Image (cartoon, rainbow, N blue to C red):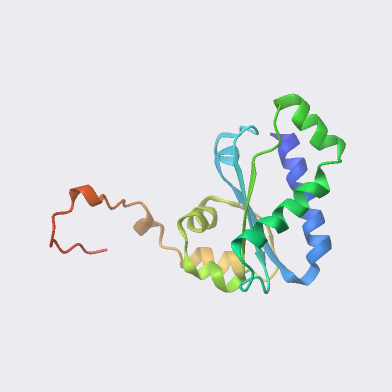
Length: 152
């Protein structure tokens, strides 16, 4: 697990170096963290100022830009050599105002993720707003009869 965390640390440093004050937070989570298996998926939530007008496609290009920054590193090469694949790093890049939309994957990261950087405590504040008790329920549409009123 240490080799993946070292890559994430280097990646985070490069992102911080590039964005400086525009970087508001970094949270990691996902199956790799939950199971301590570095071959599994690692989600990285980046909170960047002024990306609300950028398309999700362009945001993914930002993520690929930083992946390309760590590809030449020896630690990246060792990871690929060891596992035969590139690290499964998936980025979610949001503007601070978009944190409050509470998309399911963002809720998961806010409640279960590990905060690496939270400059203005935006992530901490948003995580406190999340009511975990209400997240655990799953609405199964197949069990709802036509015309039935359901309290959410």
